[in-house]
Length: 82
Image 1 (cartoon, rainbow, N blue to C red):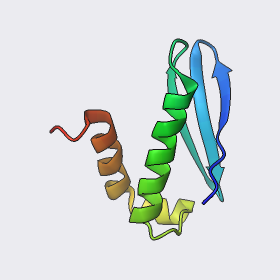
Image 2: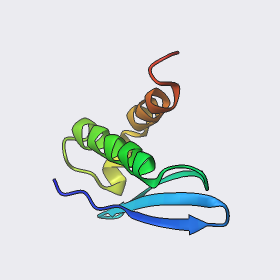
Image 3: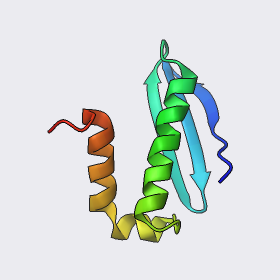
Image 4: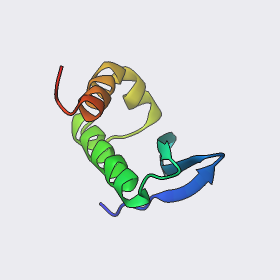
């Protein structure tokens, strides 16, 4: 799947985002963060969500499986430690 992310600045934050059907995914970091690293995090999260939702990524599927998506975010943030 071709991945295209947009990068912008909002106040003092770097924002990398992607719109998928009716779902918006944002990754933010401080102004000193590398945009490529943030885009890599976004790509990893998107790939994980696609895998978890069976490539049917939309708002309804995300809401129905929100607990699994939260677990995925927790694993990204904690690096697997818990």
